[in-house]
Image (tube, rainbow, N blue to C red; front, side):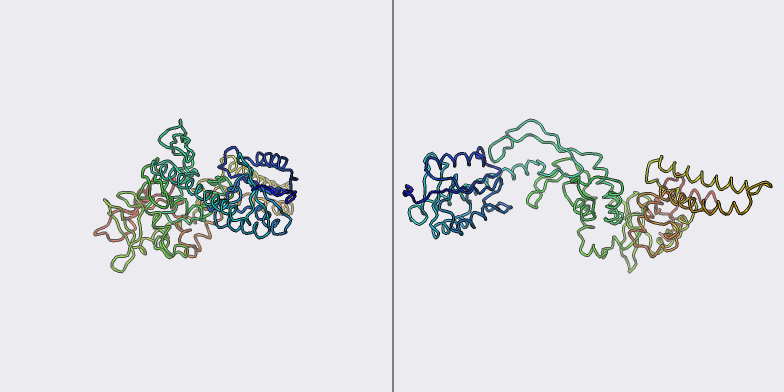
Length: 501
């Protein structure tokens, strides 16, 4: 309709640009609006802008200026609102109809200025309202068609095995030339993409998987990663047990492409975890009651920590004939089995004895690099040497005397104790940081199962052999075990000490 003379003297603007718009920037809409106001003979009024916000039902963000525009209309200070096109206001029929009703009830004109023939509409007139309603239906239909094309493109990419948006930790991507085999919703050719293993990150994923199957608590693993300064997958924040849980249950580590919660493509990229490991992880991490340690894998300290002497794979607990046993449950082997109580008792005795040895801490891998540990040892040695020199001087006939020695010793001993504690800390591996070996030995059964298993795996490689008639238990069935870092097995040490096996 033609704008009645003197009906409107000010036109307000609502400008919006979604991320998918081509050539319809907010700045361009403002320039066109100002020119339209000049042609129309009205003054430019308020400007409401929502850049990069979708007006479709698939939008996830609120449009703050649109809400402010509605308040402005309700205040009766708005006489005409200018839009580049109907889609600038809304792409959903429900909100669009509500907007038309509000403008009709308060007598606000709607100006569409983006077409070749700009026009002003009065929602109080049925013909104008009918036109605007039809434009709203077309706008909603347009976004639905676009949505369908986008979904079709995403579905096609998934079934081609193209990796999804965010890069999965443990992988890198290599992009190639554009290909006509896969196109975007706008018709642009997608580049070929190859997802390859990032070995530095993949080692961490495999280590997390192995430690989890061995029963090391996820939160403990997160602490170790944070202490070691390992960046999180996002590069921000800190590792948590929940992050590790979600990571290890991701089928992408088997090379599978999942789309809409269904398997779209197998072998889409190289696997970091084999299918058996991934299956065991999901069974463990998705089992109901895991958070309160109700699953059997967290009930026994050698579950996943002891190895089969035949296939060298982890043993698992299994109940048979009313008794719990550690067994090799891997198909093609299943060669060894031993009672949980009998095996735990012997291993407990060995571990506690090892923790009480003077060189227990030295058997662990240092937390830090050599220079830090070397300097701490040098500082400790210098303090001890100084104390020895003072003791020697006091023993001489012309020495400083006992009083001087006692005064000097009182000053040096706290320094020696502190330096000794520093050396012990640096000799303790990251997996045992915060633990006291003597406290572990004295209160072994008071510690949680997962933490005892962590200590066992740090100190020893426990191997259960087939030695023993009819599978009867004997500590000698652990003869193939060895202390970490020791080239000799327990059996070799026993024989050297005269024990007949």
